[in-house]
Amino acid sequence: MTDNELELLFDCLRIDSTWGRERELAEFIAGRLRLWGVDDVEIVESMPGRPSVGGRLRGTGAGRSLILNGHLDIYETSPDWTRDPFNPEVVDGKIYGAGIADMKAGTAAALAVIRRLALGERPRGDVIFQGVSCHFEGGVGTRSLLEAGFTADAAICGEPTDNTIGTVHRGAAYLKITTIGKQAHTSAKWLGLNAIETMEPVLAGMRELESTMPYTPHPELPGGPNLNIGTINGGTKHNQVPDRCVMTCDIRLLPSQDPYEVRLQVEQMISELKRADPRIEAIVEFSDHWLSGPRLPYEISQESDIARVAAGAVAAAGSEPVFKGIQFWTDMVPLQQFGIPSVNIGPGTPPYSWADEWVELEKYQETVEIYHQAVLAWCN
Image (tube, rainbow, N blue to C red; front, side):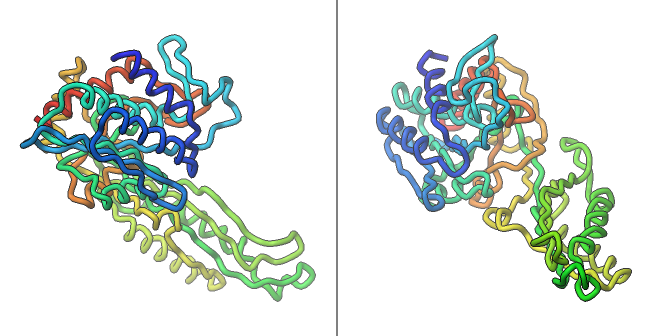
């Protein structure tokens, strides 16, 4: 890896691309792609004010095409940072910077390979860079670039998996449950119905459902479904009986589970509660954040062409290929929906987004080499 490839990562880390503010980084990357002579470069508005950037480096002909996909948006920085999150530095073999694990190191590694190829010898097949916004909305940026024509025969995503090869990951159901009561004043509370109180058995029912809903175990994804109750909001004032209570939750699912079926299971659970307590009236919906990009599970065979090439690329870069399931959701789902088989390889380890976030310098260097070897093997 060259000093220029490390500086490219530093340039990306210096730009604050916190969720919703991706434009500056997208424009920076587009400028670099054009400077290197990438043939087709386009900024696409994935959502209003939130652009993604696509670049196609045309091959010499008769080769397969490959996408390198990375998202630009990062989570909000924690106030617990002890360093300047947007002033990257290398200390004791670790590169520190906001969003470096999730996932600017993977995105910059893909850019570094595009630079190598554009300024050096091009492969036979096209290589496509996708720098996507709106990843946290469920792959909106990836879909918008695919719709704009930045497609290929296969893809590699760079989410943080410590450079293990991901061919399977969990899905998710983001649910919003609203209990409906009747407003009244505390002095006459018997004339109302407290929606917070009718939410209480629903919360207990959700916790029980986490351990009882059916699923088929997966050898690469240990454990069953995971439930997190994320928010609860209800009521307007301390002296008013609340007529609404809203709970949102995230249920992480196995590939054997269907988010739509899980929603029906929740509705059935609430119906059973209602038989015991007819006061319970609840509406179960997918959250708007889920509907913008349904978080379906993903799985592809480890014997698929792209998985075999990925394993060979890891070996060519000097490491032992390891296949490992991914506990979170990736943009391999929208890619699959466009008929593009994908795997995931990227630097970074759990918890993926935290104060003083870091990635090992050697892992970033290794990722650049893996991506380069994958391009050479697949596109030639």
